[in-house]
Length: 233
Length: 233
DNA sequence: TGTACATCAGTGAACGCGCGTTCACTGATGTAC
DNA sequence: TGTACATCAGTGAACGCGCGTTCACTGATGTAC
Image (cartoon, rainbow over all chains, first blue to last red; front, side, top):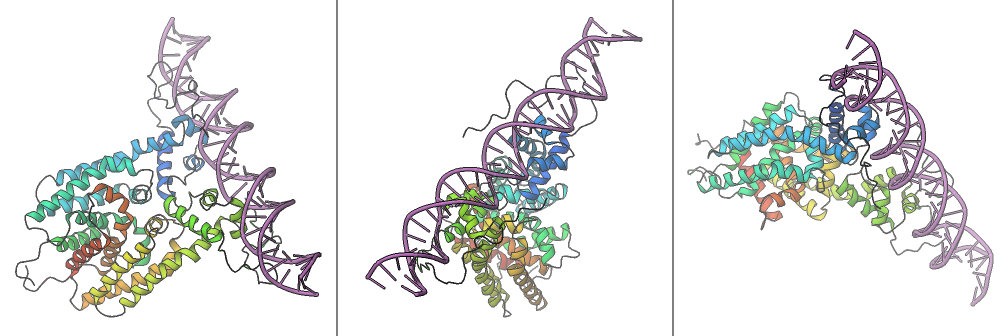
């Protein structure tokens, strides 16, 4: 039952980042390591992490499976390296941008920053929605805990408290629940890009770009949550 | 490269549904077959289809892996049986209910039927959101084509044309795109139940039930898409 | 300046385990005669 | 009514393949002396 120890503790280093002593420090030629990370990320996003085979990652990167062991030790450490060197660097700037925009009291600006920040992140890193849907949204996803801790919790609680404050000032329809309003915001922002391959095939989506979707979402949301005008029925 | 033929064509029948001749027709005792289908469905939803191992399904159902071959031939035919006997029977009633409600011209009633129909389906079959997210939403999902053809395409095109007609009558905000409005409706309906394990952990969700979420969603949507009142700015 | 050597950046082949699948078999049950 | 037999509903053990992992090795490159 005991899993085989992935590294016999005494042969080669798990990751060849030892203090530079003598050998050949190259200084150039990035080598195969980054290509292995990119190939792993692409497979993770398109097939799911649990269904991805290391041999496929190696083949995609033009390397041998033995190289994965050379650089990362085993599959678990490969995943950790992908998180650390690919996923978190893509997610963090968005977290910071939204947090900055939500610092003030302007709820409309905070919502716009959220929608646009998400849209920019996805444009820069198109693998985000697929990976997010499979490995964060799904119960038992391999990235749930790390991404929740690193970005989900701070953003969600910040936005929900902004909605509650705006509602207390009378700027948000009193019939809405601020917690569910945050959920609706996330739904309208995360779902469409994740479902893009689907709805482009279901609807006639010609002529609809990222900007159109953002504008539509903001129009719908801001009419939806705004408090009723005093003269209305 | 040629896959091994899963059935040597001449031994036992792939599914023991032969014409009753002599033997022991029992007439009672459902046996392990339905339990295998249920166990497979549960694993598919919680781990994804590609990552599910047949041995785990057998163990969950209290049977041997050989039994899966006895009833279904191989993993591909097991999946087909799960689709035919579990998934489609759960999905079809919702498709028909929404189609019936969208027959008339009342866009508000059609939207409410969509939201409530989805909510009822999920309450009856809690595995729907997880399976849907992994295997329909994701590109290359194992259920994409069958569920799109059987329920997605008819419902989505029907609702989008209803939105377009209502907008032509002046009932829907002219700044919104009716195709994206349908996408927003799907987002607000599918995403929250799929993300429920997540947001119950992120937000303080005490006291929020299915009815509260439906009411909130309808409130937000119907304020969001309604045409501006004439006297408003 | 030459050269011995340490390290880098990998490769090809093999190993052992777990998986899907197969095979030969079994006790229970109902039916034909 | 007895009994021979066909079928049902499975089981236990094994098989072969593909996977993650390991091992021994290699040519290239830079450094110390």
